[in-house]
Image (cartoon, rainbow, N blue to C red; front, side, top):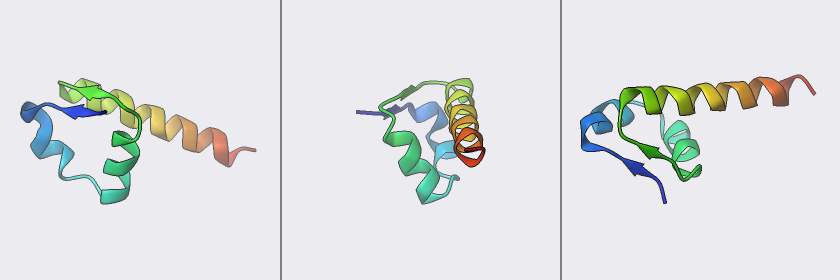
Length: 53
């Protein structure tokens, strides 16, 4: 189960519902904005890899 710390909840809530769902499906723990950025970068990398096939 994913966790979003109160300190970054406001930033997390600005994301689209699809992006929030994609993040939460990863079972990650987000304590800082850097944690959130890392997960977003992973999603972008995976999307790029999927698009190149």
